[in-house]
Amino acid sequence: MYAQFFGTFLLSHNVVTKDQLLNALSKKSSQHMKLGTLAIMKGYMTASEVDNVIISQTHNDCRFGDLAVREGYLTQEQVDELVKTQYPDFLLLGQTLVEEGYINNAQLETLITDYESENEITDLDYCNEKQDDLDRILANFFHTTDVAADEYNASYMRLLFNDLTRFIGDDFTPLCFNPCKEYPVNYCVSQTIHGDLSAKVYLDMPETTCISFASRYVNEEFTEFDEYVQASLEDFLNLHNGLYNVNISNTLGKELTLEAPEVVSDELIDLSDSSYLLQIMYPFGIKEMIMIFINRKLIFESQK
Image (cartoon, rainbow, N blue to C red; front, side):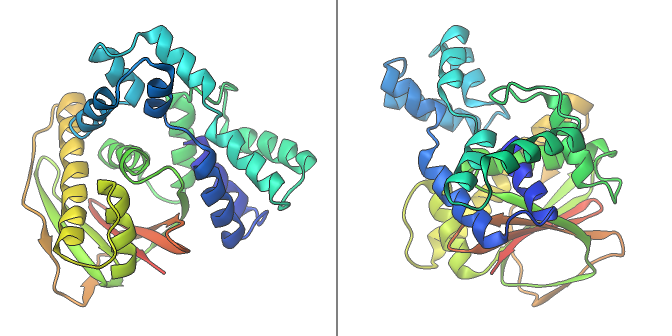
């Protein structure tokens, strides 16, 4: 998560433009090799074993390496070796920005120091991010609200960023978090959560972004907006909220239930005074992904 919020830091300090960051994120993604791919290359796992772990991640809020050890595919020593082989995303983004000529090495060195200081990052081993450091980064990002202080909300946001990384891609940047009282709908699916926490979540984006989002999610190239793309959005929303329910039950002992996802037909969603807009940028051909956080309601959408 260091890399994603390093991008946020660079934008908020006007070091790079959105287009420059998008270009760097696209190039960084082509250089990054996932742990499962490295395990196959090393002969530690077969392709089917890697697929089994990826499927298991849809039911468990766990990192690939942790699940691979739990399933007996890798030893902890092998995971540690593979992690060290990966070039840290945080530094890879900085390197890409330098290679593209957006900043120089001296600026990168200063920016890394300032980023660490601003977020009180204590772990200099960027391959192994500390949860305390990540919690401070999230708290700083949501500093104008009480989101990070509420464990329900904080848990949802942590899981959201993790699920985006696991199932859509790590080449995103959280942009801003602002109040929002109404929202115009593009293509939108929603899901209601009942129980100790009452919430409603909306996933909304233009059709072209839906196609890119779904293609990444199912690892299949879609070329048109059809029922398969629509079903993929519903499945992602259901998967994410299902994992959230499991986490809340395990950590807080609260029981939640989900309604089936449904398509939203309204053209405009009226929100409460405590509603917020979380904007997340993905390089889907220069698109933006936006999530609206409404107190204990969440709206998730994407637009140009």
